Image (cartoon, rainbow, N blue to C red; front, side):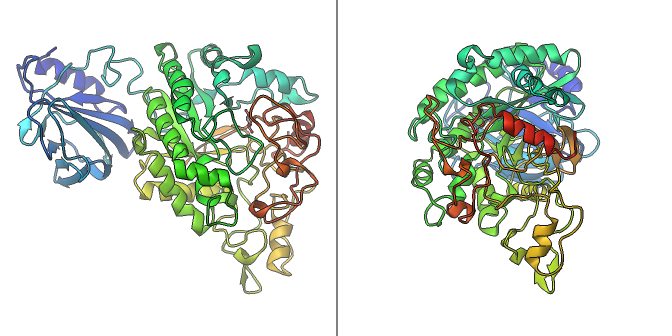
Length: 573
Ligand code: BGC
């Protein structure tokens, strides 16, 4: 296929300056045959002051052992950081040269790289590219409806900086029905909650329940002519939940191929259906997996054999990379990777290594950091969004509160400060500077009669912190059906700098795990952290579990917990 330069420029005029715009370069009057190279330049994401671009170069001439692609900007764009190429800029001229590991470029082969940049005004697309000094051409001119990178395709260019801004969020009718059936539940039954794809069968619906297409169809109805976000939880890695037992899954540690072909591929195919192109689909990718590879592996005292196995076989990293790559192919999918919570990764030993591991996973199996729209913290956990009566910088009688038993040298005391700092850390190591954070506030309200109304007494760091903290857990490491917890902030868009939304990703009322052993065919084990009589393990520093009694299997409806969450809601219902 060929097209004239005039037609290409017309197309550029339509798309220039919009996120997701793509351009391929062409000189005048060329035909389809014997083009020496093709460069596709696709703006994947764009915000007020910056953008992320993916570039794919195809070499149609003789094999090369190294390569350099060049272009110039018409505006004030500045490349700030890149990946899979060495990027340099002089004035408006940019050069992208191969890294040591991707120099060879065979005849007919392609190589991709990406970068973040800044701009002001209009982010006009470059109009000409060279590969080793030779001008590159266009192969399809951007009108091929089967090519998702074409600027004319529906959906392409629709990724916005914050998908929650100006959008409604999908209310899961199945959760809504359970909530509404509870006394007082109608007060929150219309809140949006996450749809957990927690096993392969969930794609088509478990026991006659709604499958993924059913949810997306219902979402289209809820959407009407507004914008609407659908929140999915991707949760089925091989060897899932390696440091605990309550949410072990159906796939064994080595079943990465099944994860790809029977789980991720079918989900990606459904999400790519153009019928759903108008939905903003948020995926939260694999809760609790990567953080476990940092904190619960040898030589730490908290190590488990299963986490050592998953670290050694690489299947968490591969699975997350594969999921990001495949799910991110749909231009209306927004991938958010799980980033634990402050009471897990907020220590110096865990913080930077976790960010580095997230980057490793986001660079595995064909994924790039541009496939990541942001990160989610506190998923299904109980850490307070903001503590009001102490900060990590406080001292009592000359002693830093970091020496208190509760804080125990952590750098953060709540989720919002942790999320903002983790965001900065991730950008500093090469994630796009437009990434945003989500905070799961479904169960971190800590209202009710036990909620402090003033700072604790300044007798010691412990009385000060324990008296003033909203989070009433026995220990920060407690995670199962916490007694005293309440609903947190209601879901809302853009509540703070760097935070895309407060969300209820864990549906309130769904158990974290059974308090006694219960036979099941879901792969779930019995974790004594869900047993209120349990005296703990190294991961909660041998404290009582703080769990509610009589809990059903994880994911199953737990009416008593739902009632307690409403009673202890903060803000109150
Ligand atoms: C369970 C899942 C469930 C999810 C949401 C997890 O702890 O393992 O089966 O879908 O919670 O409630």
